[in-house]
Image (tube, rainbow, N blue to C red):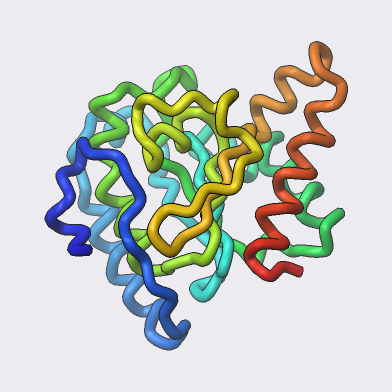
Length: 211
């Protein structure tokens, strides 16, 4: 499937074939230069830094979140705030390091006051997410939160209906999960939510052949 022919407003995961790691890092570096020039949405003007995806070029597991937060905006790296620390601790318990996976967001700039990304902003950024998928071609994609789930599975998807479900889209395995920030916000209401998050992450890692 030609990713360039998919309209940016159309959700869905393209057909991906695994590729050799050789050359991926160079192509990804070229993509980052294009990303830095992008001004398709207004978020760039209000953010401090671009927050592209990062991780192993040959990662078999890609994790897709929603949008950068305060710490991510300050440092220009995804998942480095409180939710990122929970994410890394959860990986460590499984025996996986952050450097073995690839982490990214649907949105590449922080939204004002950390509000939910607007539909127009998600559509503007979808081309970048598809480009990351095409370049890295992971075996497994973990969708962290409702925004990521709807972005790649369709607007009709409700996270509560698909969370923890193994979904095959073309030749890619997709795992919708809670976002770690959601788990932290709801810990008082649901003391089991961290265990649920950790179990879902473990299943995604196992499917990807990790550790």
